[in-house]
Amino acid sequence: MDTRLNYESEFLKGVNIFVVFSEDPSYGELKTMFDEYGYGFMVPNKNMIVIDGEILLQNFDKSFLKFVEAHEVAHIILGHDGPRSDDDEIDADLGAYILLKSSGKDDAIELLQKTYYDRHGIEFDEKRVEMLKKHF
Image 1 (cartoon, one colour):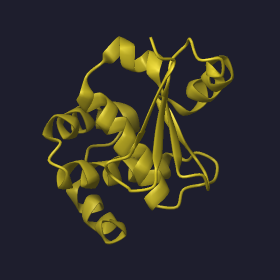
Image 2 (cartoon, rainbow, N blue to C red):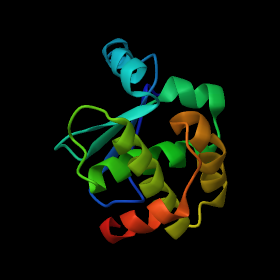
Image 3 (cartoon, rainbow, N blue to C red):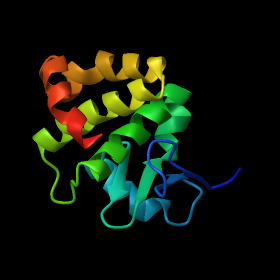
């Protein structure tokens, strides 16, 4: 089995996605970041997104991978490069919604909406999506 999967994001040209599995020599070091940031994280100023392959193996569904990818790409588009904040996470999910909708990823949109309240403690709000559309 490969220890890493690399591909260019379909949501933003020039952004490289790295899905890293536990067999990869760098996984132990990355695991602490996955524990802090969740399923994946974007590397500021590098146009790089790193996704936890072990989470994907447990929950594999292409819609899950596309949701995580779109969420992290939204962080890049929105210029989030500082410490993690609740508002940035909400905006990244809403940005992911915009990206997924424009790409016809209905299964990933359904997953995003289904988990939104549990992730953020608030209901999904189309009005807030409208406020972000100018960035996408």
